[in-house]
Length: 356
Image (cartoon, rainbow, N blue to C red; front, side, top):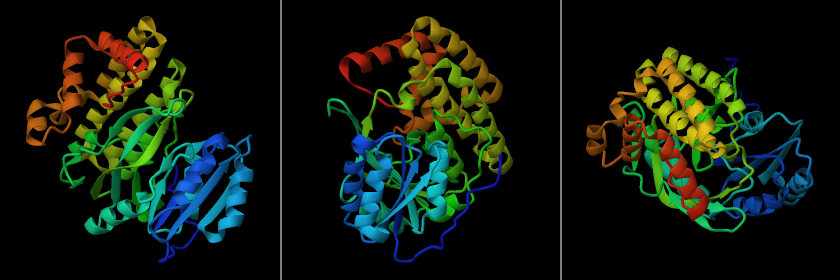
């Protein structure tokens, strides 16, 4: 783990929210995203656009908007270094009180910034989170509407770390108090898959209150060629190395969070990652699942009998973690392989996706 992220710009009290867009091969979607962010009802929103060596027309589009909108749009051009490095450059340049991240193939509602900012300020929260729609980029069909029925208006991470299992790990439906990101640890291993989850867990370590807006404010476009939908078995060892480093960081700074991390490892590795591996077929999934279970037992041993995935916890917390409790029962009955295969087939054939 190397040093933390830095801020190269001094905060500007007139800027309430900095939104960072890491751009790579998104020319076809970029204008729609930029227009949605520039049409916000909240005053004091700046866009930090990082062209990550994109070989298409992203940079020329960004320069056009920078010229047209002046200080509202800042463009950073860098050689291709990956989305993590692009976000880091954006954080260093951001001047806002809060910072958000949007993927430039997505777009937002006009009150996205206002509702998230107001929710954060009303609770003096470190993070504010909103609902979102998952939409097929090719057909425009809405797969699902998520994070609009969170059982609490807000919660404190120190008091209720188990509720993190109900919070999606994506960055693009949240805003963060800028100071949270200033000294974010820099892991030695940053996987191309699940880097949002790694980022989120590092931020959560030092966060207090999380506030929720139950409106869907972000349109997340599901692209079949995106990294999260194209996991290959050869990418998994790097993911495992990053997770081991994350556990080391948590053990050294927030050891009381380890039971929650064990449960999160099961959620993101045992369920989400294995679901994506299942696209390779039964033989590939069986082999990957054996290795995955052995990894969880060795590095995150609390996943099997976890206090946050028990029925009692679910019933005491308004149904929170109920789906994960169910899938943990399926694992306990040795039905993980058919479950994951059927789940994948359901998504492919019916266009329905239940997020775990």
